Every structure is written in structure tokens, then in C-alpha cells.
Length: 304
Image 1 (tube, helix red, strand yellow):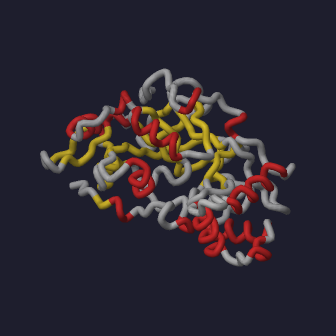
Image 2 (spheres, rainbow, N blue to C red; image 1 turned 180 degrees about the vertical axis):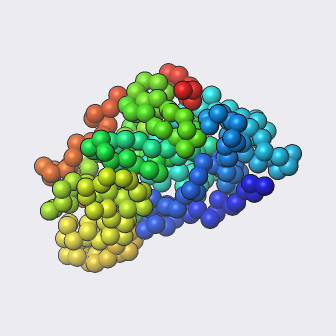
């Protein structure tokens, strides 16, 4: 039996910023009303997402993914939008914080070639957030997530992604199920950052995220805590009474809720990154954007 587990085991980085990007399940799953239900692939399923099976408690059996979604009275896979989730969005707790306790969201994992997941700066929630960076072709991100969102969820997700524009992802993703999601205009999407990406002094490029392992990296990755400590030093925040990563998180979160000066420090850091000639161009400047974040012309296509 593939018994569901509580999503509370996977805490939202919104609640624990220093844990960003957050612990996520190690295999494909469906977030279903507070439970993490694993997707399994039977030998005769053809190794496709449509052949995935999910434990259906009401019937005490493994049901097809679409049957499971139908039993929960939500949209099937073919009517959902596959959106690359390379930061915290594969974390069940983070999805609940965005969609609510009753959310039903399939999440699968795959590999993209020629891209890495790096840190950018900085969120009201207190963490350095993720960005995708195009790299040499031998870099392969091994834990890229894809959330399959219905239209309402896609709209809500766009509202929560203040630093990103919805865009078409140009490359293919090879899923753990064995199939391939086609990039470009074939119905694969990504939230692409519209701000420049930070490059620390004496570093050869943006900082890879240690918790998102990749093959073939040329730069040393860092944890969230290490990155924020580097921010303290790089932006001389000790002069403002900020000496540690924890203190930086506390200040950012406090200022986000301050009506008199909301996000002042965050704004100053972002302005410094924008004005630094070593910062990398924004990903959104190089991808084809979806107008107004929401005008997706076709539903998600998971075939081929």
C-alpha cells in the first residue's frame, strides 16, 4: 500500500525562511487536501505520467492519476498547465500556503539540460529566492519540479510570484516517469525572474543552490544560510546592526509589515544588484512571455 503522508512534514519556506528552498518529497506526488500521495509507475504503464497510479483510500486500491483527480472533483492532467517549479513550489507546505488546505496539485520531477538553479535577492519573506540560469550544456539540474496547475491555481500562483513573469520554457524536460515534456510553445511554462541576478564579488557567476543538486557545476553552491551571510558582508549590513543571516531574515520580515517603510532594506539591496555591472541579465528578458501572466492560449499538453 502506498499510504499518504501528511504535508505538514514539508514545511513552507514562508514559515522557515532559512530552510529555503525547502524539503520536498523525493518522488512524484499529488498534494491532496493536506496529504502527500505518491505517484507510482507500474511496469506495464508505458512509463508515462498518464500511466501513473495513486492510492485511492476510498476504494482501497491504486487508481490511475486521472481517476484519482476525478474522485477529488478536480481537473484532469490534460486540462492542467505544466509549470516548472525549480525553487520552493515543489514543497507541499509552500503550495498549501498559496492555494489553501484543500488544494489538489500533481507535482512531478525531471531533468533539464543546460540550466542551473541559483539564488537571486530578495523576498519579503526573508529568503533569497531561486532563479534559473542558462549554463553550459553539461549542467543538468536533477531535482527540477513541475507543478500541474488548473486555471484557477495558475492565476493564484501568478499573484504570489511578485518577482517573476509567466513565460514559455524553451527546452524539454525529461520526467522521472520516462516521458518528455516539450518546451518552447508546446505548453511548458516557467515563472521567469524579471530582475537581474546577483553575482557576489570575486565569484564567477550567480550562486548555485546547494539543496538543488546538479551535475557538472563549475561554481561552488551555497545553502540559504551561507548565502544570506554573504549578503550581510557584501552589502555592509553590519553598519545597520545586522550581523547574521538570522538577523537579516528578521529585519526583512519586519520591514515587510511596516506601513511606514515597507521593504526598505529589500529595495536598497535590489537597487544595488540592478546597478552592479556584474549582475546577470534577467531571465524574463530572454524568454517569450505569456501576456498578463494569465493568457495561456492552450491547456497543458503532457503527450510525447
